[in-house]
Length: 251
Ligand code: URA
Image (cartoon, rainbow, N blue to C red):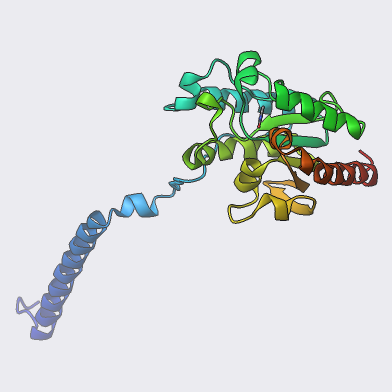
C-alpha cells in the first residue's frame, strides 16, 4: 500500500471542507436573520390571535357552557366597566328558547337587579313582546355589554370590541333560530359598522355565528321608541314580521 495522497482525492476533500464551511456559515447567517425578524413569534405553531378571544370550546351541555361564559366575563382583567358596576347583567329568559334578543348595555335598574331590561325600556319591551304573544319567559335576552357603562353612556368602540367575543359566543351557545337586535349598538356590533338602523330595520338577514345559523332582524331599541314614539308604527311592522317568522318556523 502506498502512503501517497492522490491529488484528485485531495482536491475533493478540500472542496468538501469548503462547501461544509459555506453551509455552516449560511446556517449561522440564517439563524441570525430569524432572530432578527423574530421568527418564533411569527411562525410558532401556536397562533397568536390578538383580535379574537378564544374563550372556550362549546360542548353539548348548554347550562355548563353558559356558566363558563359567565365566569369568563366575570374573570376579565382590566375592565373599567366591571370595576364600576354593582352586578354582572348576563341574561334573562329561557336558554332553550329559539328566539334571542340582544340590547346594548345595562342601565341603573339592570345593574341593581343583575337582569337585562328591567327598567323603563324593559317595561316597554315586555309590552312589545306581549303584542306578539311572547314574554320574557318564552325568549332569551342579553346585551352586547354585560356591565353598566357609568351614567348610562353609550359603550365606546373599544368596550364593544372587548365584549364582542362574549356575545358572539353567547349566541353560539343559545343557537336561536330568530335573533332580534335592539338598536344600533347591537346592529353595528353584530352586523357591521357602515349601516344605518332606519335602512336596516324590518329585513331578515341570514347570518352565521360559529355553527349557529340564524335569521336576524334589526328593530328600534325600546329606549329610542320612548324618545321617538312616532317610530312605534315601524316597530310594529318589525314585530309582525317576527310573529310571522315564528309561525313559519313553527316556534
Ligand atoms: N337597555 C339595554 O340595551 N339593555 C338593557 O338591559 C337595559 C336597557
